[in-house]
Image: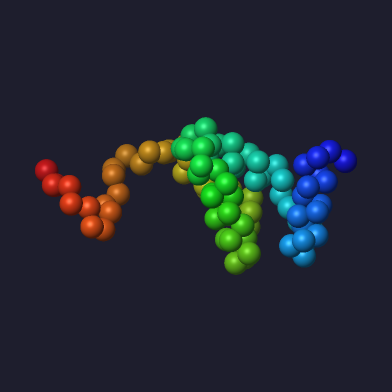
Length: 90
């Protein structure tokens, strides 16, 4: 057992989940793609978003694929409107 496996086993035990239920490769691949394609601090936060969604019934592989596609398309072609944005519109 390597250090990651030992840590995940302990963390899973603390969280009351089965370590076999952790899609390690999916989460690590997603974190890598977000860190490299968007912004490094987005990696752990996006992994948290994935975890929240999975807790609410989302399929981790499907959602990770969608989030990776989003990262590969980042930044969006049209800037999103932000409420309270005071910048003038052309």
